[in-house]
Image (cartoon, rainbow, N blue to C red):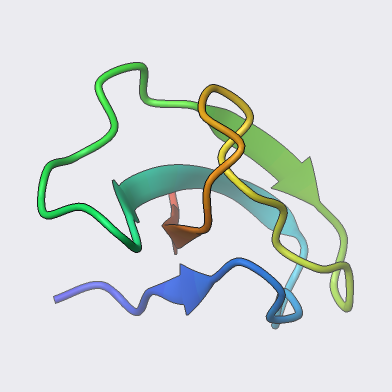
Length: 59
């Protein structure tokens, strides 16, 4: 299982991360939003819904 990171946590390494699921919902985010972060940057809320999200590294 992939490590997940929540909105507000800092990225452990640079890379592209995608929304795995919204924190307040059991369903996956349908749009597969991806963001590029540098190590130490904070994970943002989901850009599509502006809700707290869980992120996984995609590349």
